[in-house]
Image (tube, rainbow, N blue to C red):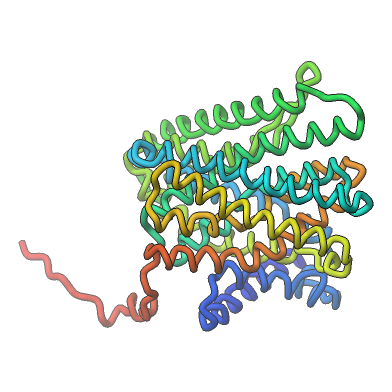
Length: 432
């Protein structure tokens, strides 16, 4: 226990110190947290074996899964806040069209490239693995995107559409992966399961949205019994924790495996809550400030999880480079043509695709499922390699795109210490 607490404190401090260095280099704080995690991870400082000063093994990092899952829950809850009815009326059709098309186009392009590699060099990559990687390519990580948006207080049409698209992307990616993985298993085993390819992903999405909606309604109902801001904040945090825990439940009914998507459940809770609670915006802002340390830990731990051993495998590097090139092409091209179809502005058409490049937790979860394939190890390692690359450069690319679209204001020089200096506060005298 003491080593874990010291390690978490050390991780927070390292992440914060790295963010100061990143600021001087004009890099997003997310990148700094990830690099900080790499430095204290089991392949750098952690390898020394000093208790508390770094993560000594990947098992130790994975043991902190409760922190990363909780942080993802709060991130999804915050993204749900973007689905207000006023925004859905103006951008809902665009978000759904772009969210679906860019994911499908990415999957098709990566599939074509990797299947071609299989036909040329079948000993490098099997057909089931190629098809599975194509579906995993559709997944986009919402966490890094949201952190960049928050850090630079980005706002505008591109930012609003981006946050809605990354949320929709989770549901689309889930369907694409389930279908592709089902086909991949059929190629290996010689039989197709309609239940696993079609029924199970649909059930997961529907049940996740229903559970999240029920959570949002209950949260709003219970909020009415509390008037203190601190108590309402505590209740909101309790409900996010409840939804994260409930989303981990898995069971089987008549041979059908039933589960929930953490991101969809928490996102739907936030969406319903923000649309029926009149004070939700203020509460969301308070939750955001309360969860700042949790988010830093999430990215530092994510950085520590990045396995540097995969860089020594030339086969993984070859397939990984092809995967990254064609996934990037698919995201940029898919976003561009879908934005043109929905008549988005030129700024959105040019910049949205680049902001969809980050990839992390969802893709890694899919890769774990794909481990049951005969070629499952290379699928996992290729995804690990892509996450390593995308997580380190993705936030900077997102920042550049939002700057190019004019949705990030130049950073000021204000210091929070000076801003809160009690000697410079105005004094008001009450008369009467």
